[in-house]
Length: 482
Image (spheres, rainbow, N blue to C red):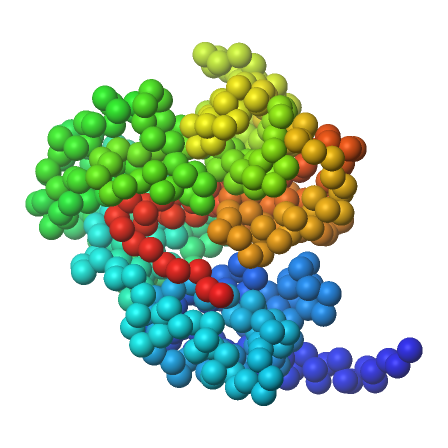
């Protein structure tokens, strides 16, 4: 076995780091000027560092035996930066692997990219909104602040959604500065990627140049958004206080509101949308939509993939869920069973409606699943254990290979991620932008019975799904290429 000299490893690292540094301005310019969001096997490169780029290349070994060399991806990016393209999500990693493995004989990088990206060349592609869509966050808790981060980071020519206002109840003391501080620093998700300052006199937060009005209100039907220059807004209700059509319709009584999205499971006949599965049920004229729950978003895409290929006869979903603000920090009265006990000290057995909620997105599974949940003493990242009886026998290798392919190449690639790591733990998945991550090393198969372990960042991954539903509601569609 030939081993490189010790200095060769450092020289190789230095060369790769230099290429990553040269990539940064091209990645930023493609996003700001053309609305191109670059990824490497699903890992976004927006606002990343040189180390992030190198780690994204390294991550490809989860999928490809040979991994991905930045020496190969760099010329692909160089050519992309010279092309006239419409807004899209482009996977630089898959393009590079494809060129190395699939390019026609003696085909140049330019010709290969023209062939693969034909649908968005020269300004072709689905038209986006003529003007930015106003967005209002009603409530500013865990999900509200993460949605704010996502909306702010995506400000660019390819994203027409603009966070215009946040509605809260006024707190005591320096309310705006306190809320800005919570946006600036997060114990789980780390510091805000940018700069934030407040305008106390104007009741506003300025985040990366975005002017965000803070509006104080006690009821959703008493606000005149038009006095702040906000028109036809999409209001995202993060409070969970109103979960049926009657309650959420209160938002539509305020001036300047056109649509409402609930970031919790909707009740009654309210559409519960899991993006990637039933988002096509949004026809454009719906006034009120629910983005379902974090757990429903995590399991439904995987269940759909399995049902499409194998058929699901019946099964049980056990959720191992991080504690939430609904629980008590220490023992105290709580109307729910067991939830009054200290969240950071106990595993708390509780109910979940996720299994029943599956039927709203996947009617073919109605009545086939049961479910329960255990709240555990971690602040974020949860797991769903899917114990299923399939329609035919399979093997661990076949099932994992199928799910790996789904994660890489299907229409569910934004929802389903895949890991082969045998060392992964929950904190490693903080910040995951997928709805769920299949832990393939833990898959169990016995004939037509299988047990799958699906991780999910119940805060950030869910928030990414919410943003996708928001885009669908306002008519923004980005093609995923290749």
